[in-house]
Image (cartoon, rainbow, N blue to C red; front, side):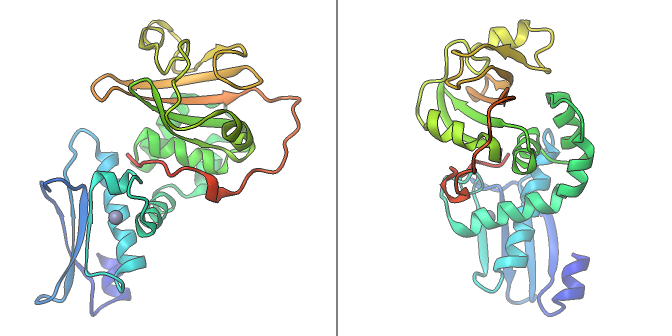
Length: 254
Ligand SMILES: [Zn+2]
């Protein structure tokens, strides 16, 4: 609000409110009479990271798109990337850079073995969800790693670090069945493995990659949804050029 008052004094953000919003996660509206913008976000008391991301997303619309539209309503499916609208992707990207500066994030994880605990620390540091922190890490990591979201046993979307993209493009597609022995579908394994936050080592043949894989998984029974983080053991395999970014499927934000 302070920034907008300094930079755009004739059209600042004058209201910032948590509000029960029917069917959408956040909104940004130009109030003609008062000559201010109102930024609203659905309260998520249990998951403050989600509200932070929504606020940052709406702020992104303010910074990037306020001259294009006078009203933005971002449903979860919009912020989930399902609608695929360009301005929604831009607002998501703005939010992720605003909340998780890459220089700082790199310093936090430098030299550490990646685990859910390490990512969880980063998520807490930036006030974002574990998923948002994971996707950000994949953007700059030089490790070969892939995040896979599954729903009802099927692959819903994936995102890979640069050096893992070629393996993902070659072996993964939306709608494919998740491997039967993966943590993604074996919630019993997730619960019984004492070190599951560190990941379970799979030989080749569990996930469809030509190398062993360490898998960490977060499973939500309530939504019948899983997110697996796969660390590919590609030591000794030469990295080629990463495919173009435009080919990557758009992931949701949480
Ligand atoms: Zn939006």
